[in-house]
Length: 370
Image (cartoon, rainbow, N blue to C red; front, side, top):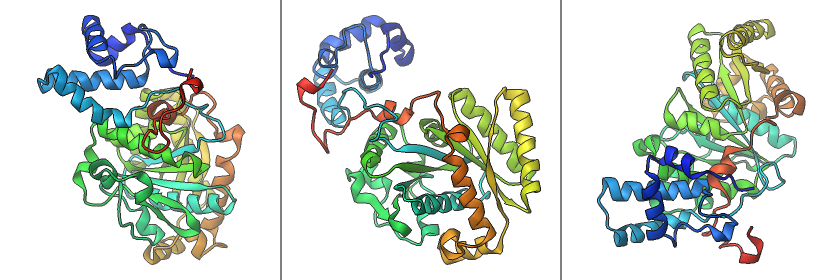
């Protein structure tokens, strides 16, 4: 079902006057198509809003003429093909889980790669999107060296399939790149292009793990809110707990329907982990009126440090170790629908990406649209 917006909502989202919007509809009607989607002139989609924002930028900030805007939109529209999205929880959409943290140094990426390997061992198709843009390091812990990364998609007109690297167990990895400063500061249009490219994975994986950067930057928060569920990684360190609570608070302000779980890493034992979670859980209930999910813990282990040095996931190097069992228990909890499945909101990936795949599949036949 297409998400619809009223003209009043579009005015609020774009900052344009209603008269300007109506003028743009007429001047650029070939780019703002309504009838083929069963909409009328009072209905708008997220893609209409994206196009209007692009027109606003070109006209207001850059002083483009109507003809110049049309030429620019022809390029922009290659990544915007408006049509009804598929059912979000349908068989063709991956479950998207973002793994984030309030600060660096808590072992977030180690958690990501080991969870991916355990999920793959269950028989599910799992992929990793390393969204720590410009500082990506999933590939290092997986022992692979990508030839290309997302900067080539955003800046070099590469297709996403060209930058996918296969890791252990055949897990596809999309690297955000290293040392590419521009990737850490994507604008709205570049982020939108990127997310639409990621939609190419929908038929290749059952689960997509998104390794966000640490902290509260725009990219970290947006990628986290796009996901179906969010895993916040912390440690017994009090500063890590405070930062973890901060990012949980901000995520809930941005998306109140977020489903957030906590994994406590580098603990001495389960009692150490329970103390950490109880501290965060109590704070969330008292100050945010939110019930966090305890997804489990990973004990501090020399095995983990050795596996990082060896650039090989711990669950593959030391499959019978205590932390390997911890990861298996966490995956079991994640896939317990009664514990950690978000049924309150649709995947924002589907909202933002839609089904815009003209460059891969071409437009749908007119009879199939509606």
